Picture (cartoon, rainbow, N blue to C red):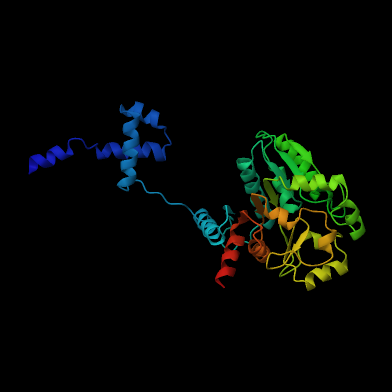
Length: 331
């Protein structure tokens, strides 16, 4: 019996050696090749010892909060709404400290920029919308990772809003970052009925519609109209007071691409619908990868409206917004 036990142990590695390898690799950060050379064993043996250390729980792994919660939130939202991808950005706050909302917005924008750069290819046509989050996202694009894709505006100009947020400015900056072609719509985003009727008959309009039909990736923020009206379209001079009140009466929950959306995810039936120079929601839904980037718990119902209307494929949001979205569903 004792002899059998001895034979079974002949090929086992020293426990002290397992401990030594694990300590050097995980605590001192030494490379596998370096460990192998110092201890006079092969690199494959080092790898086997590291696996044994994990199997025997000599080394255990724990994902810290809030990172773990963010991954779990992302998976839950992705499965619930059958989305292509969800990224939830952690919010680092000390106990009782109010989060810096501007910093949260920038962090979410950074995640959006990095995601876009991972996914984009030379063959893509990327449509961009305007907005505060989009402004930061474009600034975070790394000019060293050039792709040569076409960058297109998804809607017309917004002359009365902050010039730095204008979609033409954002598209030009993105095209520079990707070393790609810049295609902009210079006409106003909101026209009269007569102006739109004339525009629809032009070759320019037909060419833009053709480009819209070939967009492969879109990136947009979302403006909030409910429970409070916080959208920049409402707080600037883009909308007249009567137009704003009409949208509220028609239960607008959010805006995206200069189009105003109700809770069902459909466009509000007002005269703005036919006066807006922007990609139609039908054409937008056909874009294979629709990325929406947003932050702030006030946008919970806005995101829900977009999800209801199948206007999102990839959702990039902050931790509190993600929790609010799931809490609303539970409620």
